[in-house]
Length: 295
Image (cartoon, rainbow, N blue to C red; front, side):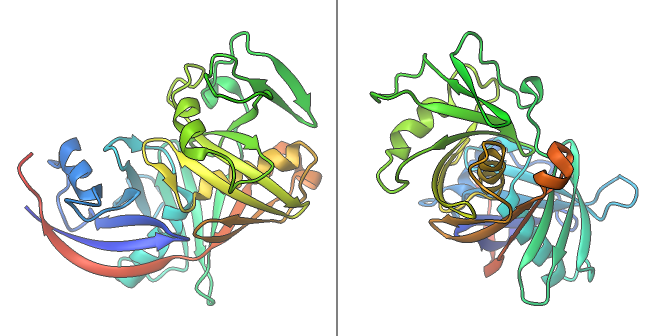
């Protein structure tokens, strides 16, 4: 099978974007998805984004996300911005405002004349069974409007307790406040927390360094992909966590290793029912074709 694709990125979080409207993707196996995402033998990407038709009324497209390890996940913020750019560049739609179906939600995406894309990421989810998160008997404390948990079962070699906040932006996130993103052993802590038994479906792990009440540095170890240069839902989760802890105020500038994202969440006026808006770039790198091996 010859597959047409486009390579894109949002703040260095890179994607293979595939038109599933004019190509049949139904027979592609998990091993073939893994091959495409492999940086040595395939194309290489953090995730694969599929553009498909939606059966929902007043929804323009269906948006599916395949992780680097071949698993399908619920949400990808940086990918959603690339999604908008892709469907407009490929003349699948001429709308600047799109409604897109993802797992369990519908996103509103808007491209501005300056090339930036704003995504309405919806409301943050804090209920444990919806994240999902099962803290068990883990020690907990309250910080502002959110609880923090110490995962005592994590064999993280740290003398001081590691307190995490948990929430979902359509996918599960754990947020940890650190003194320095640069000095934090993200590649050591990330997989331990990702696979902690309290997170039934694993978790994305964000390491947040607070610079001011309106600016943070952030590194994210993504579930199924490892550390990426940027994570849109991770940026939203970090901003929401900081605002709930009374440590940040909206809007929040999020500096990732791949670029800058801007997060707006009007918690002061609307409370937890406020929707989260993320704005950032989306870039096309190249178009190509690849022959899928029989694996």
